[in-house]
Structures are given as structure tokens and as C-alpha cells.
Image (tube, rainbow, N blue to C red):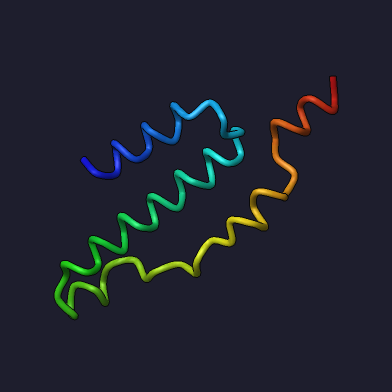
Length: 74
């Protein structure tokens, strides 16, 4: 429920670009996976997907995105 609420809040925020929404949704997914890992036993953690390196929000926000490319090709 937490994940759904957070994603819905991000996608309803009209101040964010599509690229920012995608990045934020991925970060929420990563946080959800971390929360799941925290509940697992050590044996279960070994079988569960390992954590990914942290996302660099500054690099992703400044990177070119599909929305900008589509506008540029019109």
C-alpha cells in the first residue's frame, strides 16, 4: 500500500517531467525492495535480489530524456 500511494503521488505531480517521474518511481521500487529485505531472514536475503547501487538523482535529472528528444525531433 505504501508503494502504491507513493507512486500515485509522484504520477499526479504535474510539476515533474516524465523523466523525473520514471526516476522517482524506480527509487520507490528500490526503497520497497529494501523494506522487504529488512524483514527477511539471512537465508532468505541470500536468495532475494541483492540491493542495487543508489540512484544518482542529480545525474538522472540532468540527463537527456525521451520527452526532450521527442520535442526536439518535431
